[in-house]
Amino acid sequence: DARVTQTPRHKVTEMGQEVTMRCQPILGHNTVFWYRQTMMQGLELLAYFRNRAPLDDSGMPKDRFSAEMPDATLATLKIQPSEPRDSAVYFCASGLVENTEAFFGQGTRLTVV
Amino acid sequence: AQSVTQLGSHVSVSEGALVLLRCNYSSSVPPYLFWYVQYPNQGLQLLLKYTSAATLVKGINGFEAEFKKSETSFHLTKPSAHMSDAAEYFCAVSRPGGSYIPTFGRGTSLIVHP
Image (cartoon, rainbow over all chains, first blue to last red; front, side, top):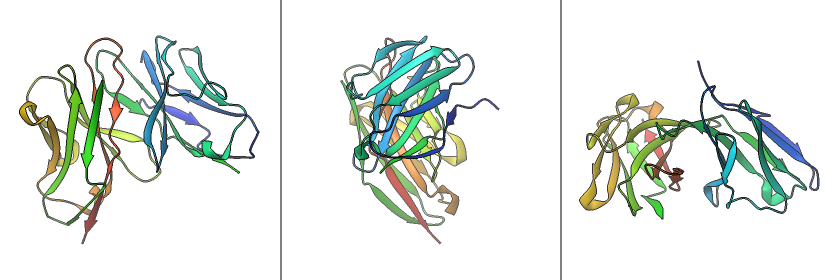
């Protein structure tokens, strides 16, 4: 059963600490998305990769957030330093450009205290 | 630019009643349209998608949606609600070709009463 795997599922950290979230996209998928979900803003696109190359990260605060794909099986989203306003659920999704739909992981619930 | 508007942040129905969740889109080119469902503490799951084939699209769990270009709408319906349908529903739009990126609506919470 192919699925997008995100780790950790939950993370509580103190303000100022570095947070790294990991995503394993579905094998063979060539696009990866990072979304952030909050009650206030809904689902916001943070970053978009195609064939491991970042194509759109305009929604990501550049001073503290970074997203990478070291290889085709791993995508990372890093926040350094973290702030309480970063508390949200972060979703990774992957897909095939040809099929257009996105397959979502179960998310990482981040709480920054 | 592309966007979707979901009318009503909450919709409440009785079990067995018709479900209607509204979505209107804006797109400069013929769009691809999607409905996703999110159960508590889960990721989003695709219900159905429209990609310029048949305008009436059938999805999983008895849901369907109709693409109406003249109304720029893609409303989601189900003839008879079940308790297990209670969830958050998201409409999304993307642009075929190029660097497609799904843009999501704010979501509609479906509440089903016994």
